[in-house]
Length: 601
Image (cartoon, rainbow, N blue to C red; front, side, top):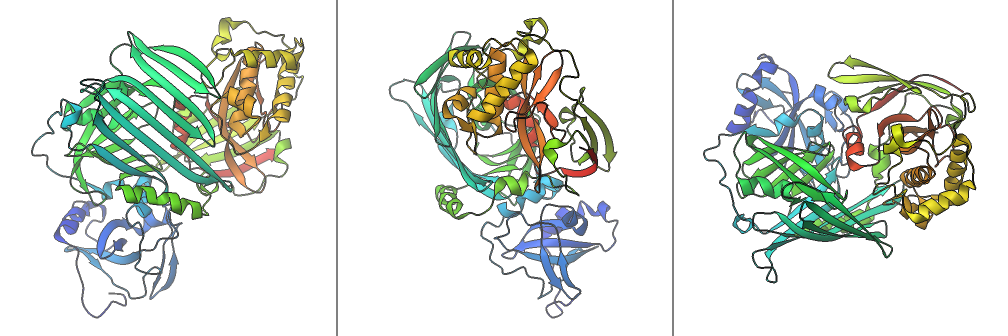
């Protein structure tokens, strides 16, 4: 034993020991140097030094061998104890070391603070299968669920960023109907500026959870959008209001529609058993769309992260595959969606972060979105050719090749390394094409959408005023890009759509891309929003949005930087502006590593 406290050799509990014995094959009975994380005398994580070396967590320990440093701690304001231990035939014996404590024994949020590690390949150590004696019987009606109110907190890489709450109650004015009132608050700091999103929604549903009507309000950086939705024969009638202007559309849907909270309520309503499948449609007030949900009950598990056993349910919706755990009361206790975690809390704990976030100095974007590089790139806005390797880009949907961007995929262990070679042609190298472009082949890039209101009269009139009769495709998009860059202030203000950017005259890269795309489509130039990475001098790669317009060929246009064509540091990863289009990016935020191979000015 290395510098232990006396000669005592404490052992783990029978449950902990048996849980680890099931993985004894990994160690082949040999003594391997591993680590336990202990909080208030309770072991909450077991992992090898290899895992700690390759995780997103940094621990600093002091032992007889001196100081040892591991990767970055998710919550640096919190402390814990990290105990070295060895595997033996009798279980795991701690090698207690009085000098191995980290700062103190105080740990403000002991479990959530280290949960980020589970998302990086150690999930199996948190959840253990347990036998299911009896399946969860269908609740049949919403009033039969074991709860009427639910609170949960949101955590992004271990940092608490918000909470949500919903309450179920009977409605007297609608006999046999129920009202589900919900709210969600998200606050964080991005590039030094506080950001806030508030969503309130009221859903009226039948006793079996089918949606009747809904109304809600979303507040995003001071901008307010209101919605009213009602289920009618053959679909959903949706009304939206911004700045006193109402818009209405009908979404055709076959079969019943459920509220977005059905992702947590539908399984217990229909009954839960390992192997069960569910398929239904929900209305999302955030994306203003009806989306199909597919769920499957994977297992019945117990975890130190929540009380009692729970059903592990995999959900597939709009390109996102979160996992949710629902207990035997039918209540959601835990959820993981990439780096985002939701965990059941009480009301006081859920709301406490509002005060704490006002004191927070952590910058979420720079902490987790920045893709660092091995060497700097001078004059990035003038770059003509870039050869870069991105490690951790495992989703093939994010690997796009076209006439400007060449890609090649290689495997390194369990992850992918993608080589990108981006080459920017010179303006005027190809023949000019007149506008409007015929809709026959590129009609989808001329259509209006909830975020790109190219058919709105204000957008159409503005495009005509800017162009002044210009018929050349290249010159027309140049005028439009210059106008957006000159008249929309580059500021960290979110916008719901192109019309918001036009009225507010300020916004971040997405607002610029939305407005430019809408103006181009209104002028008859097929244009799409694209997103990916762009290099910022003395910083690294950050996530960014720009556009591509078709004028006989696709040309990248960055209205934020006023670049035509956009420089070679623009690495395209997705196309489109909808939530479904952008969802693959969520899975890689915080995971990418960049290596600069070569570049040319």
